[in-house]
Length: 172
Image (cartoon, one colour):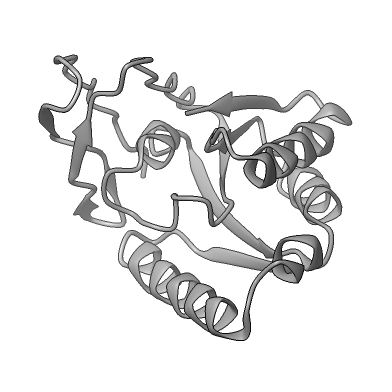
């Protein structure tokens, strides 16, 4: 079934906004969004598009309050992916890795409620994303843009993965 995307109301920074959200798998994605100074709201995926929401682990391992997921929900197909990248894991303690693994498991369960499967990759993010983009004929790749150095490296890997195809990278 094709889902529709409700527009975000644009309020002053810090004011909560309740958006009707999108319907996936018979459930409505309810979002509480906080307007940010940049007022970044990603463009919705066209109804005939195939979207991949890449969860980097940098502030985006959630279903609620996720502008990228809401924008992707209007596509004919929505896929989700997380990659356990050795470069990312190298700077983490064992406790942080266990917490990350638990958060990814929670994310998989939450996405399943909306009939969105979470593909979990292991290895290089760019390679895993490139393989997913090609295998699923992804037209739009939704990526969270964070200012940290590690998150920027992940973003560059996602952009590299999309550059080999006509996939549009949509930042939020």
